[in-house]
Image (cartoon, rainbow, N blue to C red; front, side, top):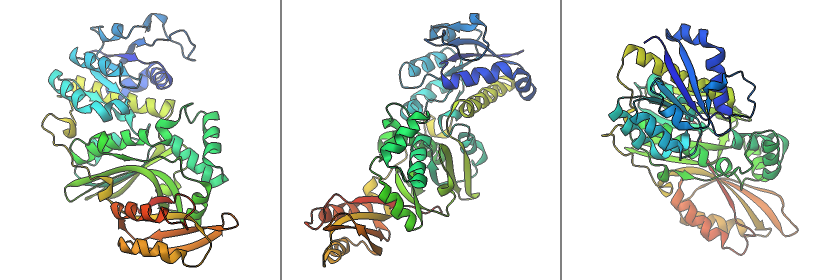
Length: 433
């Protein structure tokens, strides 16, 4: 083979980055691969808007079928996102004998088994480095660099929008809405930020990472998800006074033959490595039984970081084509791979931060501690903070490790007390291993 020909479907932010790399650095890529990689077709519904890059107009089309049906194209890059028509495009490319590169985390989190089953039957590769962590090579690390390990746990700050908002709230005292508005003005948050701030984006990513780490299928529906919209400046302040920061953390642990996979606001010690991940950056902390603790850090989104990951996948596939290597199908999505049993959130255990608003009178703490005690929840510390109003005060509590089920039952009772003025805020506490 004298060259590898590539077709691109989706010429948005990431697509422009990929086309720029392939068109502006062909010599560098050829030197590293051994053969030229040529971008020959670009499909997008909008091919008239200037992209700031010189492209031969004959390469452009508004019809994805032109790319999918071109017999000369070896690799199809899907960068339109969403489920449909992306899924149909990928399946058609695979069934047509074309290798595929995608950065579509939502599609992979929900339909990876089907896609890889088709890739296996067709004898082609499906690569997806750009789906998690932007320019951070976390997929390749789990797939290759850490393959000799049994992965014990993954802790990830893997949504830049949520991390930017929480960083602003921490460093500038902004409330959630103020920080979100600034993120939107700076292009770090969508007009509808639900996908990011409610934790769904992070849930897709931790589903993919968990499947790769544990060698079996983790279902997205089994992942517990809770967003950051209820975190207040007071919680940020009190966490800081206790020596913690609040992060939207994606957590995956494997023990006793089962996994716990969850996404939620989390108190992390200020001295932990993940606590130092600021703004739109991502950090992923992985613990393996042989390697111990490892930390991956970098830009988790954006045009060029993600384009870098996508291009790396193209290069990997090109090398496999040249060497006539069989397709790589991840263990977790092979036809005979097992389903990973994921624990219900109520089976998990954690320490907890709780912020109450209570009537300022004697006996309140005794009522609360009595309920916690009946549910076998031990209090680590209690601090009475400033007044909420003339009759009420903030009460901040840290517990020792307790079961989620017990904590939920206790909080239902506590919030019904007439001395509790508003629904209490409960945030889980994690320590990196």
